[in-house]
View 1 (cartoon, one colour):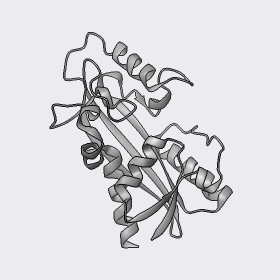
View 2: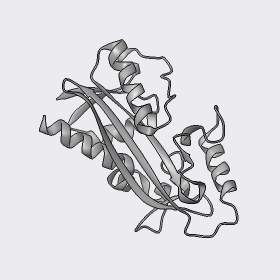
View 3: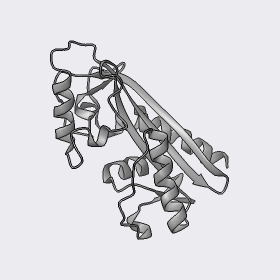
Length: 193
């Protein structure tokens, strides 16, 4: 089975990716390869940040790897929080802080509050650099709902569903999410190799 490093310290993302790729690719974490550095995310696009992280691991540790960057884009906020989704409420904010800021920004706006999640995965392997994108459309709810998931999951309702990602749970989310779609594109590429 092919081994790849997933350049993330986010345990939620790591378990989500391992679940999606189970039986197809063995995923190593940064700690599995002894990488405990904070990898910079200084690009102004999702693709740029994903490539920065993948190149960092490949150049310093020599492993084929992939990295992702995900953003939530809200139409009425001109695409914010976008590339700054993880630090929308400040450099050391929590997911709850980010959700609270987003709901505050949208206060008084009725549904639909259209938004979409986008994930870009950058892969570096023996054939070079590749990017895979996944997207899911939906809307931002008036208040958080659900206990599963992480980040903005409690306030994002995907198109075609009455529940938020956090209500739907990991199994459903892993089938329909932006990350699942990007990972499926990655998996197809890996399986064709």
